[in-house]
Image (cartoon, rainbow over all chains, first blue to last red; front, side, top):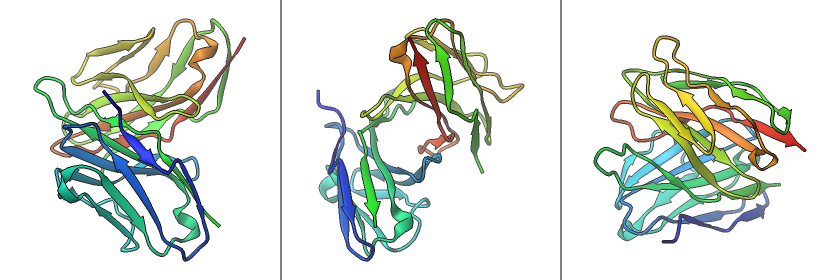
Length: 116
Length: 112
């Protein structure tokens, strides 16, 4: 079974440009999460989808960030326009709650975004 | 709000040394606690977890015990190997929220 995949693995863009990150969750996982780690600090939650619906987007930093999950499969995270402070590693995770197993999340390898 | 405080790194040990990485938390209710590991060039992997007080999570020789009285979930391993070199993250999830709250990560380097 394929794990969570993310594309691209690394993106370098200039301030003011637009970047779109993609996440493909594990097949059948209804829950999809976006996190990011900035400047080697803690990993912070951005938002949570259940199927195609945004369950919680309290961690989105501002309206330059737009996440979508059309059809409840893959998700995209668009940053427009990008700022220097958006640089960091963006992680995607998915989970399928199972009785007695809690909410184990499976993470992708991350996309390293560098804004210059 | 919820928070996780993790031992600052980096930590450098010799092979076969004993490892402790401290983790304490603040949360409402009764959180589930996790340790994730990120090996070089890879994504985060769940290392172990505990879902209630006094539970001990264990995997690959690593252990951590959920201590409610001290709000701690310290990671230990009796004899580290070079292959254990990675970044370790302590995390929790609490209440009805599904998202994880992470600590800042601890870089571990094990020298031969």
